[in-house]
Length: 169
Image (cartoon, rainbow, N blue to C red; front, side):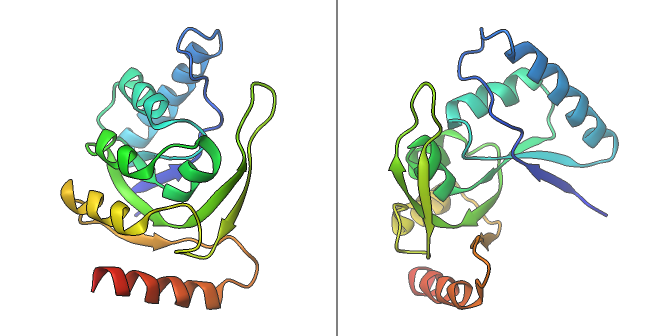
């Protein structure tokens, strides 16, 4: 009964000429083919790679059962990408989206991953009014899944729901 497999596929090279890139595409094609045989979608969660890289990877995989679980906070925290721009660039692939917020502390370098902090919804770097407007502009009708990755998240989840209700109406 599972229709969607959502995952971070691991850090994929931004450069398609990287020697590891063809191996990654081969492995992903295997997984995506298995999902297709099962009648499932294989969804990449945004955040470890730029939206441009994910779009290229999905096109290089070449199956019609690939898509995106768009996590706006991961983009802000990890890759430094604008979630609103990502919505428009990935519009044909967005199947799910998270409602999560955070802030980048130090940007990535050639040798080190970025540092970041996840924050309660509305307190980080995601412009939620603009993000929700972009989702509306592309006709997104799916869920906004609140994600809060702390041990005792109940209060923050209730706060996030109230925050979203205030924006959506």
